[in-house]
Amino acid sequence: MSRPDAGGQLELGVALPTNRKRLTGRELRDIVGKLEDAGCTALWVNDHLAAFPVGAETYPYSPTGEITWDPKLPQYEALTTCGYLACVNDRMKIGTSVLVLPQRHPVEVSKAAASLADLSEGRFRLGVGAGWSRREMALLGWDPATRGRRMDEELDIIRASWGQGRRATRWEHYDIPDDVIHEPQPSPETSPPILVGGMSEAATQRVLNYGDGWLAVAPGDDPTAVARAGAKLARLRSRCPRPLQGVLKIALSRPGGQNVAHIVEQAAHDGWDEISFEFDEWALDETCSLLSTCRSRGGTAS
Picture (cartoon, helix red, strand yellow):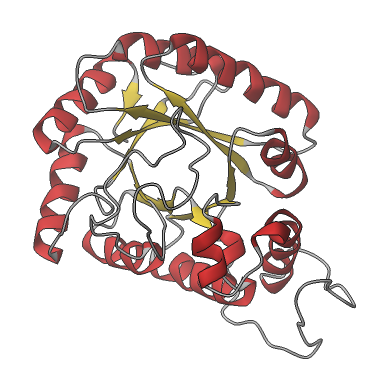
């Protein structure tokens, strides 16, 4: 199904189970190959550097305030995994959905993303978010209370280190010497788009101020949430002086049993560039079947 705003086709993405199960390189390579055969065009990885037991802190996206997954499950480091994915497949896009930016130093992130830009030949996308786990951030040495202001500054620093923005004479939270050399810098052809994740007003304002696009999320069992996200995308694009990419993550308990046809049609109508799927329970065969259904309804495998 074509997107009415640009005449393009919906791309199809999948959040890999790199935070759901222990994997070997061979197993991950096999998963990637089967997803590509089913029509997947984009691979996404999650990001946490530390985990704590259920009940150790409040999870703001759950009605009970508790995390909805087993924290003892393996969580593979996101940027390392993207580097591996760049090697085992040379066609699909790869990206972080999302990298918790305020718990990493911006020079570290800019270097890693620029490296991935070259090594993936322009297929890497840097999805970033403010994060929710205060204990994780504090463990890594960062103040959770300043994460929003620091994230804005980090995005400025990353842009500047890539040669895409001015170098400030002084940063509030980071000490970046004027004579530091940032190399490699991404070329215009391979520069990673910065996709800002989140549904809050602060997140969407950050999209307008700093992003090349928006990484939105909606539960797959709530058609009204998909429609609301589409309406918000339209408002963001109308307010932004530059083109904005739109990636809509559909959160499902497991593949299958959802009104996928409606989701694809709604996303195409609303002008999203891509829909990606993330599952609480990973099932490869069912995921491939879901992708095949989506492709027949308008997704593309190009």
